[in-house]
Amino acid sequence: MSAPVVQIANLSRVFDVSKPWLERVIAREGRLKLNAVDGVSFEIRKGETFALVGESGSGKSTVAKMVVGLLGPSGGHVQFNGLQPGEKPRPGAIQMIFQDPYASLNPRWRVRDIIAEPMEAIGLRRDAALRAKRVDELLTLVGLSPRDGDKYPHQFSGGQRQRIAIARALSSEPSFIVCDEPTSALDVSVQAQILNLMRELQERLGLTYLFISHNLAVVRHMAHRIGVMYLGRLVEIQDSDALFDNPQHPYTRLLIDAVPNLSEIGRDRVPVQGEVPSPINPPSGCTFHPRCPLVMDICKRERPAFIDGVACHALSRKG
Ligand SMILES: Nc1ncnc2c1ncn2[C@@H]1O[C@H](COP(=O)(O)OP(=O)(O)O)[C@@H](O)[C@H]1O
Ligand SMILES: [Mg+2]
Image (cartoon, rainbow, N blue to C red; front, side, top):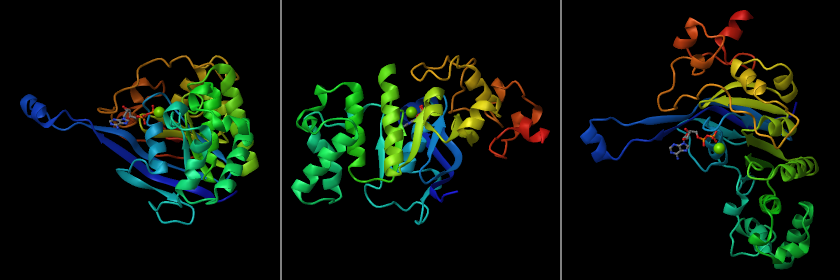
């Protein structure tokens, strides 16, 4: 088993969602805290794709932002191989790919300059001719043509723009890429092409991915291991095959049962029955207990420990 590229330990993030001070005073209300991420731990090994899956609002993007350092944790830490907890790797070593490539590509810049920018930012290939050659290589690598470098982002389709965003991410020669819903905005037919490109690139370049999606079929297609999130907590971590063949946590089972055909990537799952409670006032104990078919008394009182890849009182009792 290869060494972990990154270890995430007991990571938490609280947001202050209070009303403005004067309104609070008039209404005699206190501050409101939202636990977006609550004690999440996992590690990602070199060359693997670790996926986070869960319904909207479960805290996936907040974890992603803390892993890349866009957001500071309220508790816990992110530790990269060979560094101290919280210490940042060299600039450009970690990159992020977002759902909406248009937002991350400067519309006034030619594609060639967009792709060259991360290289310039970290002083890689200081010679302009070398940089230009590398941009051509990157365009080819992601299935575009060197001539596309002279165009602007709006001249491309959504899928092509995501290819440009990938080329840009690769430009600083990262070893680890965090992908947050990278194909969720794309048409069904295009999604699979981009996912396959990302898999090819992983193999060719030995990349490690943290891959985030609400779509189980997409996650199954991409991930070696999967963590399932519910209301800011991880409820289960398994190898991808094991998770789909033999889901343990009642929430994981609910999610998987809600998908009619897991081989159809483009198809979103049917929403799961029952509402997700608010993270501002989450249920006590195991936060899944109000929706859980296996609920017991202890579930309402105590937060379940994470044992053998799953956090569930009912399952740990059985063993
Ligand atoms: N900057 C913020 N301020 C306040 N609340 C936030 C902020 N960012 C995210 N949240 C809240 O944190 C929770 C988790 O959000 P997010 O990480 O975006 O979930 P996901 O990516 O799984 O949909 C949600 O309830 C969301 O409303
Ligand atoms: Mg998100």
